[in-house]
Amino acid sequence: MEYTGVLKKMKTENLDTVQYYLDMKTDFLNMNQLLQREIELAFVTYECLHCHLEKEIYRQGFCKSCFFDIPTTGDWIMRPELSKAHLDEEDRDLEYEKKVQLQPHIVYLANSSNVKVGVTRKSQIPTRWIDQGAHEAIEIVEVPNRYLAGITEVALKEHVADKTNWRTMLKNDIVDEDLTIWQQKLRGFIPEEAQEYFVENNKETNIQFPVNKYPVKPKSLNLVKEKTYKGKLVGIKGQYLIFEDDTVFNIRANEGLVVKMVIA
Image (cartoon, rainbow, N blue to C red):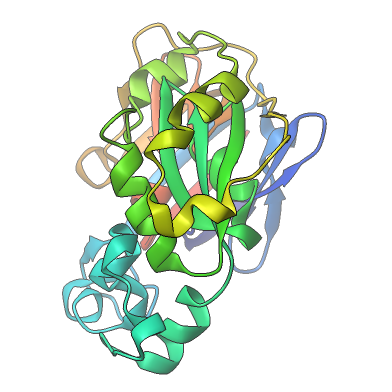
């Protein structure tokens, strides 16, 4: 079987084991069904996810000109505390910014390589946790806009990590934590404006990933540099494909690449 398409992050479904789906334009692949199969990947070209032109990808699947122009890549995306739609102030496109920023947001704790704090729209739970490769997660606050979530994250990351070690996450070299204890421990550090939104009496969400074999020494595949790669798929975690020889390929980090995929 042979497929060609532009890479976009895999869609997921949180069942007993996470189900992964890859959109290859004319085909929608359930990647779980490809476990233990030989897969060959080949770099073809680039395609910006916004303008769809054949231009080198700069960041997040977009060419450089789109990245610095479109509203979906404003600074407030990565730094929610910079959100200003609640003040009726525009960054790039106020209508879009109001649509995204002025909706319920969650500040959460997730354990993927270690316990970390993060922010996402409520509608993205548990998708965000799955994409980060978290095997357990819990909400801390549910606030009405992105700004309040951002200032809460800034306050809490003084006391807990805000980054994931991707190698540790992929090796599954992690320790189970009682996130309800962490939640209570961090409660006092929540900014006053967000204290009323603390989520009481909630439980951890546990996530199971389809991995038959974890890599011992994961090595990241640079498909643009290598041009082609072939290996047996043995697992999927976060947005990573894991191969038998410890090679890993981050679909999310390679959005905008047009690839050919051959499945033996």
